[in-house]
Length: 610
Image 1 (spheres, rainbow, N blue to C red):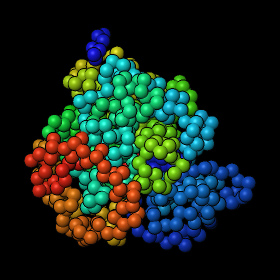
Image 2 (image 1 turned 180 degrees about the vertical axis):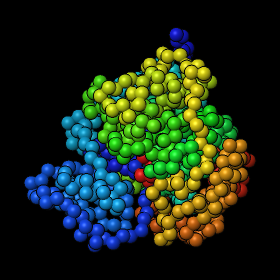
Image 3 (image 1 turned 60 degrees about the vertical axis):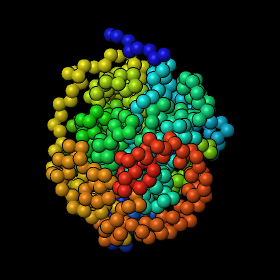
Image 4 (image 1 turned 90 degrees about the horizontal axis):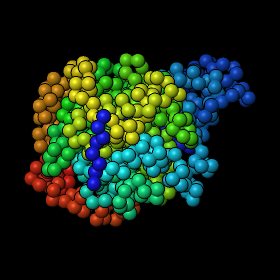
C-alpha cells in the first residue's frame, strides 16, 4: 500500500571511469609545423626542465586533424593514453606549460584528470573486492545513502506508470533493462538507423549506462528495492519505463538538428498508445554562446516543459570555471551538476572538479552524485572496447560526469511524479531545489540549491502553483541553428555541417519550425523539416551531397567487422528479450506506429553528450 503524502546534470577517462563529454568535433587542418615552433618558443624555460612539477590532465583537442601528442610533447609533456572518444589525450604536462597549451586554438580544453581509489583497490578489473553496500559509487549507495530515495521506495513509490524519455545513443537489452515493458524504442534518428544490425542499439555505451541509473532493475529483483539493491542492480526509479530515442552513433556524433527533432517527437507523442512521458533526460550540450531567448534548442526544451514534461539537463563537464552547456543555460529546465563524495560521507560531498558551474546569470540548479558511478555495462560498445579498465564486472561499468548526475535526478523526478501525479514541472523543480541539502563546502555557483535529498522532498508538501511559477523570459527561437551548434560540427566525406541546414541539407526556417513545434505539428508521420527521418526509409541528399540511403551507410565502416561481430549480430542482441512484446509487441505496432513512414515494429560531442 502506498503511503499518503504527509501534510504540513564524450567520455572523460581516469581512474574514476568515463563521462560523456560531447559530439565529435570536426575542423579544418591548420599549419601544424608552424604551430609546433610557436609553442616551443612560447614555453618558459622551466617548463622543459626535467624536475619541473607536472600535472595529470586530460587534453581535449578542438581540431582532431592535428596530432595533439606532438603538441603535448613539444610542451615538455608525456602522453599516457590516447582518448579517441573525445579527440583527446591523458598526459603528464608541466604545470608552467598548461596555460600556454590552453591558449592554443587547436586545444579545446585542459582539465585535471580525476582519480579515486575504490575501497583500496586500484582499478575496476579487481572485481572480487567490489561491494555495492560499501562502495560510494554503487547505485545502492547513491540511491539509499546519498539521495535517500529509500524514503520513496519504502512507501511503495518506484516510478511505476511514469515514462522517461532518454534522448541519447540508444539502449541495449542487458540485464537490468530486460524486465518486461522496461524499454520502448522511439525513432532512431542517428546515422546508424540505416543499418538493420545497429538500428536502436547503443553502439557507444552512454545511453545504456544512463538508462541503468534512471530506471534499471535486475531481473532477479522483486519486492522492496531498498533490500534488493544491496545485492542486485537497481536504478533510481526501478519501475519506471524508458522511452529511448537514439540520436548519437558509436562515436557519440550527433547534430543539434537531430536533438531538436527528437525533442519535438517526445512532445508530440508523449501520450500516444498508452505512453505517459513525464520526464526528459537530455545529456547533450553545445558550447554555443547564443542567448537562450534566441536559441532554437532552448526553445525546443521549453516546449517540452510547457507540455508538462520535466526536462533534466546535464550542466557540462568543462570544469568549475566553465559556463554551462546549451541548453543547460535555459533557466526553465533543471540543470544538474555532479557531486563528488570523495569516498566519504555526505558531509564531505562537494562539486566534482569536472562539473561546469555556470555564472551568476545562470548557475546550476542542484547537484546529484556523478563521480565514479557504477551502472550497466554495454559489452562491445566503443566505450567498453576502448576503456576495459572501467569494467567493474561482466555486467557493470564505471562512469563519471554530469550525464550520470542528470540521470539520478531524472529517476528521482519519476518517483516524485508517481507520488504526486498532478505535479507540474515548475512545482517539481521548486520542490527538489527547495529541499536539497546545503553543501557549504561547494562554490555557490557550482552547488546551486545543494545536493538532491529525496527524504526531504517526500515529507514536504507540493509547492503551490503560484509559488513555483518561473518568471523568466521565454525563448522565441529567433536565433540560428548554427548559433545553437557553437564551435562543434559534424563532417561527412570532408564536408562540415554548417549554417542553416539540418543533416539532410534541408534549409532551416526557425520561424515556421517554432510555429509548428508550438502547435505539436512539427512531425508529420515520419517527416520532420521536410525529410523522412524514419530509419531505412531515409532518402535524398545529405548536407554533404551524399545519399543517406543504401550503400553509403551500410558499408564496411558501419556493418563490417568492427560493428557486426558477435557483440552486435549474435543472439546476444537479437534474442527474445530484445524483440519480445516489451520491445516490439502489438501495443507499439498499431496503425499509428507502423505506417510507411516508420518501418520497424517498434518506434523506437563536447558539444554533445556530457
